[in-house]
Image (cartoon, one colour):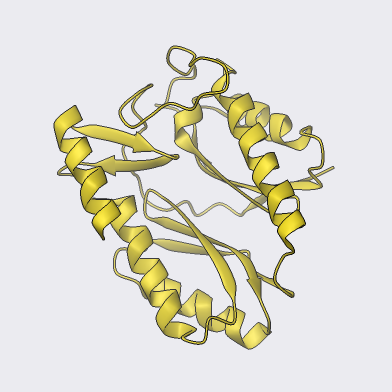
Length: 217
C-alpha cells in the first residue's frame, strides 16, 4: 500500500487526474484502479497461498484482466472466482493459461513486445494511447481500455498485430465515442510519459457487455 499512497500523493499534487502505466486514478471519483488492483492481488494471494500460479493483474475502469499461468484448471477457476469477489470489481476477464510457468527468456520476449506495442501507440496520433493498458503472455498481446471509435481500435489492434514476434492480439477495449483520438505532445524518443502528462483518459463507465474480440495473425 506504500506505493499506492505515494501515487495518490502525487495525484493530489498534480490535480484532479493522474495517469501511470495506463491506469486511471480519479481523485474523488467512483473508481480507483490502483486500489482495485491491490484488492484483486490480495484476493488472488488468499486463493493461492502456496503461490502455485503466476497470475498478472491489469485493471482498467473497474475491469480486471487476469493473465499468466496456473498449473491446474481448478486453480485457474478459483483465481477467477476470487478476483470477481474483490471489492469494486465490475467484470473479470480470465485469460490465465493452464500451463507451466514461463521461462525467463519467454518473459523477456513478452516484456519487449509490450514495450514495443506501447511505444507504437504513444507515437501514433490517431490513437488515444493513454486509454490503453497492455499485457503480453507467451507472445499473445492483451489490450484493455477504451477507444474513441471503431477505426481507432482497428488501428491500435493492427499496430499490435504487426509487432515482430506477436502471434495474436486479444482485445477487451470498449468503444466510447466521446473519447477524441490523438495523444498529447509526443514524448522524446525512448521515454514514457510520467504521471500527470499527456491527455486525460475518459472517466470510467460501466463494464462492457459486448463479447471479447480476438484478432489472430
